[in-house]
Image (cartoon, rainbow over all chains, first blue to last red):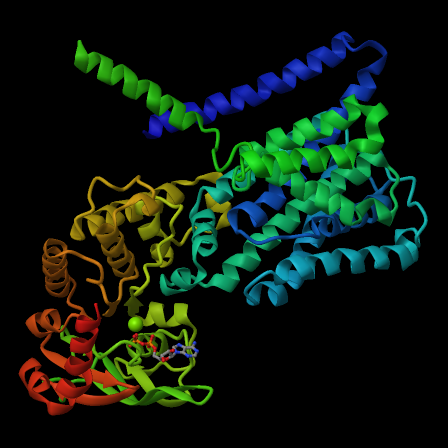
Length: 331
Length: 265
Ligand SMILES: Nc1ncnc2c1ncn2[C@@H]1O[C@H](COP(=O)(O)OP(=O)(O)O)[C@@H](O)[C@H]1O
Ligand SMILES: [Mg+2]
């Protein structure tokens, strides 16, 4: 069992490296010709979208609470990281060092915001979180529109272009691994128990508010990291980028992929960041397409495309060896 | 009996009012070590409300209660659970979409000391502790005769097994006092018999006290050492099964009504 797990971890790691090497080789070989930079950009977009969607899934899928203001936390990460990288530029840090410090600062700022928003909102039962997060996202947007340090309502430009595809890719891998391990530990188990029945959870000795706020903070932290990569990829942004539409878009990607499945979030986010780019000429119909897809998913697969299904090599290996053993016994 | 030692649970003049309704009034009860006490009464008498009071779901508007001499009122449910009171629910409340074993493990949070970094990095401490609670969860499932069902979804268990799973989850909190709210409700005689055996075994094996709510009078008479009878929130009788069964008030309030109900059906 333990050995199998080690093999699974190793294979997962190898798989990630292979995907990365493949993409890099394709870019290097110039397969995409003149659109190489463009495709690379889509891949970078996919990477930070995966982080944002997966982190939202922690709240929506695993904790079972609705958040309608994820873009608010994304924007905190984006602006704080941009300010930090701007302040530290030329202070002797390497580009990579600067990038890491900036996204970490963005993540931490968003995480702290998550605690501040989560404590009042998550103590109450019911759909308060949806309302409070929506209000928070609006308030923070208005704030960013008025602070001079964030551009004062005008475009904040001149952010360093630190988010290269390889960096975004590896940060995504680390973030998704982190979230996966989080979900597959006492933290995930506890928060799912709360989702299933908070009265029973407290009767089982669980401090419901604490674990909800903790999970919300972790989710916000990663939203901030996603936002930080976004900022240093776009290099210019305006608070209205992070409006309600953006939150709704992220939420629909969670629901389409499957609430409670990180695999679904990853595939959903990759697919949905590539799709609008591929159909650029239909850009105006993008939200319409989303709505149609969302309605179809709700009608035919209410749990999302992947439901709660999770890709697991350990399980695949387990099944394979099991089959082999039964075959041996049969012989 | 329990008079000389500190009782495991002591309720003093416990009461709660919902608007104008006194759901529980002047409730007094002492439970000694390893005692099995029954709490009975007609529907709506306030039995479940007593459980909700001593597990911190409701805050008492009057009186107080003590666990091993420590006052507990006003504490949050999870704090009371940590202090040693665990319960099951009249309307089963399982973590439906989780596996049977995860239902039990969810109640063992206090045995896991690893933090987030250890969970993320999957350190030996993480594996050791997770392994340990998995083992203990399996043992507890065996106690309630659910071995081999660890990986089923809780929702897919038959009714009687769901009730037993709730007991295993309560045991997992490592409590001193177990509150069972109509654990035999909806069970057939064979299942009820099995349940009684389990309750007996638990009491001996884990050295805990049990407070049992039950609708079925004969069942309570059979296993409880002492019985307290509630009607409209007030205690109308308390004592040994014989004393209670012969109390005219009980016969009138409880048995009388129950007979009507039986006739009604
Ligand atoms: N949260 C509440 N709000 C108002 N009334 C309640 C509440 N909980 C219980 N009651 C009332 O208290 C009385 C006792 O209920 P309960 O304890 O559930 O009875 P039982 O003895 O059947 O378990 C009932 O009349 C019920 O309607
Ligand atoms: Mg009841």
